[in-house]
Length: 148
Image (cartoon, rainbow, N blue to C red; front, top):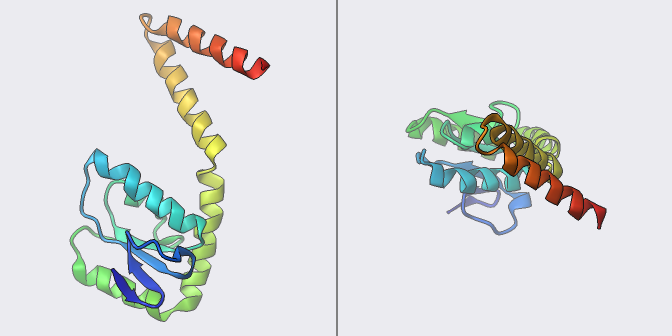
């Protein structure tokens, strides 16, 4: 939903780099987490600050007051005030957009994310005697692929 030349509600994808994005989702289910996070990361990668309700995924993607603004769930008036503040303050958008871009480069780098996930699986597999053999197989497969 377009809110003006530089604002849109999350889901609007046309020219995200020139827009400021609000994520007013109240959903907290796990099925919503990847979409919210990837949308927020995409906005951050484009140097766009985010505004969203303090809910699962959104609160992990937005550093309140640094890369955007978090509003309490269901606070429609607070969300409207935040949207109005960003719409009227291009310097705030630029400053927080730059911080969002720098954070997504630092935190959501694909190699770091993949390594963290691999490390997590290694810990889970190694922690239980019934799955420890799977860790050895995975490590052997990784070594074989790396040798190619």
